[in-house]
Structure formats: structure tokens, C-alpha cells
Image (cartoon, rainbow, N blue to C red; front, side, top):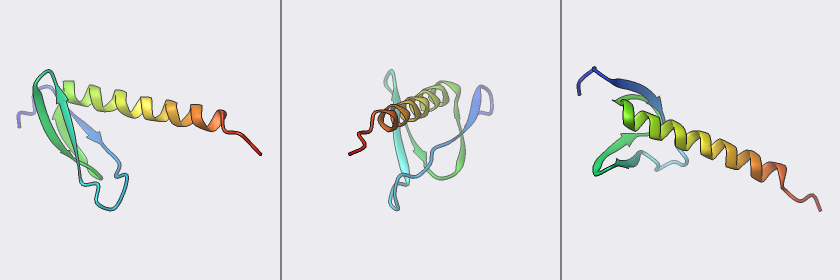
Length: 69
């Protein structure tokens, strides 16, 4: 992979057998290894980072709206 226009990303594992994540952008696709820092093209890195940000926001929303019975 070219070093030009790449970025390092980390995708945490969600479970014991969560080894790869499938990411697709406009017909381009990649399997990205989970649990370690990997270099990916910048456009894939942006999508991964946005997804992680959305996951964090949804976790915060769920926690703030949890009923306490």
C-alpha cells in the first residue's frame, strides 16, 4: 500500500472472534484488521472515525436516557 495519503486507525474488537471489519466506500472495499493500528487510505480512515464518533454519541444518548426503576 502506498504511504501517500494514508492514515493510521485503530478499530477495537467487539468480541473474541471480531478480527476484521468490512468497510466500503463508493464501490471500493477493504477488510480492516481489528485490535491493532493499521494504515488505510485517508477516505477509509475518515469513514471509520466518523463511525466511531457516532457509536460514542449513541452510547452517550442511551446512557443518558436509561430508565432507573
